[in-house]
Length: 454
Image (cartoon, rainbow, N blue to C red):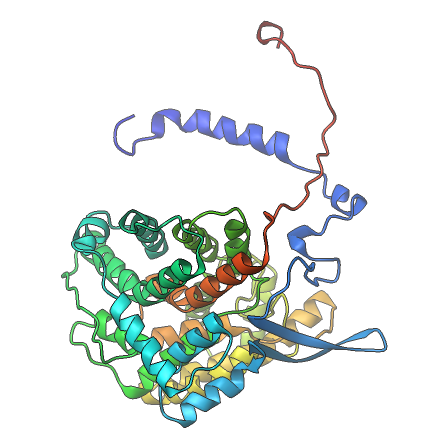
């Protein structure tokens, strides 16, 4: 085959795929028979306890006399309510993501001197190796920025003389480099994509050492460097509230599983990126944003409860948008009554919508947020608390910030890498066993048949 012409083998590939479908399909009743916790969750959706952590806690219910009672969602970083953390740095009129990264890594809030030193360290570690931008990012651009990030992180392994070290001081240095470099690699990867795939002008801006992580993302991304104070603050809050979500989310669990094998930091973080890339995890806000674009086209009167409800019913009936039967951004594997991150984010979304003249669109979001739980409960006859999750508004915010959808998930990664690094360090300090769950084989044994007798 020459180049990417696979047409000659298409029929055989289809045949291979059919063989796999026929031979790998497992009777769904067997999962119940053997009490398999699919997705590491029990029949009620509660996560199976697989580890202990001090880093973050997700709370969605209380227990009273053995009864599980859904409550307002809470998210804690090292025991501190994320809402209090955000309120603290917003009240002081300062950027907070760096403070959050410090808290996640070290387990305590920094004083002013410690925070200033930490910020200086991040500025120092932002630099990429000589010619790395040209030789790695620009010479092999990708259509997906998450793949560019992963490749770049794996390549950085070759520039590190201590890449395979398991010493915590080395892991800490590598972690600081990850947190500092992610924004630069992501933005440069996007600029390369725009130039080579979309035929746009190429510009590469070095980060400003005086700016925060959130400010620098906008500074490097925009041709004229310009951004408003509110834009940077809202992006900073987005980074702060996405930084961690306990050990049970897919990419963080991936981090801990891969770390337990004894592999290096670069391979571990690349694996986490692969997990986050998936549309069931980090890509959910893109799906939500695309769903709303479809709503705006197909619902004539955005202010009509009946028209919006009908569209939502069509979504659940697989008649609208991507025909998946889902209302994206509504519902969560853990939260039911409310997602605390949505609660924090929502008031800043309103401020940004006002600045951008997008109030009418915001009202559509609010209407869907109000109506979707009613439609879901009526359709599925469940009548349990359902709320909008953080993906519901984050895509809308990123669009108002002028961020391209190609960067939606990388922005998530820029934030979450601080949590991944913290979990990697905690796993190395406390656990000495490789994580190895059990799988039961459900096929009968058979005899080997010689080739000429098959």
